Image 1 (spheres, rainbow, N blue to C red):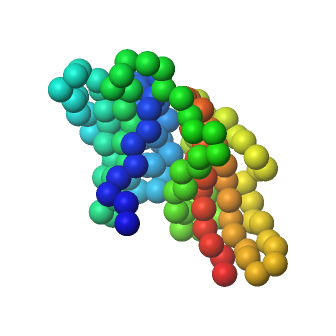
Image 2: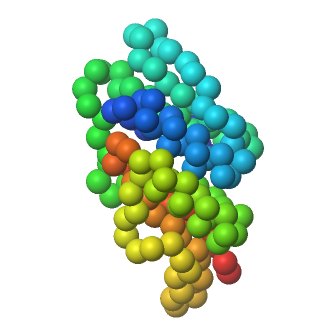
Length: 130
């Protein structure tokens, strides 16, 4: 359904380090540099026919995070999710919501690990356990 996800970054090099580390845990190679015609720096991550991109905003205004927006990344198991979260914290991210772990309720069981990246974007390491 989606061709790619692109988010803005205020400190593109700091954000690249962050995403290289958390996406590296999931098996992704470091971001590839691309400059657009207006001169903004972008880094693209290609993995399993999916594309994720961080970019300096094209309008030269500060990047902002979407209130209510979460970008989910699939993890293979809770151990990988914990490593993903730890890599994020070690590279400029901050934990948000509850600590990583399994959540259960009426008809669901899932592993969740939430982070905010250096620009404030909300991310989640996710695994459906049902």
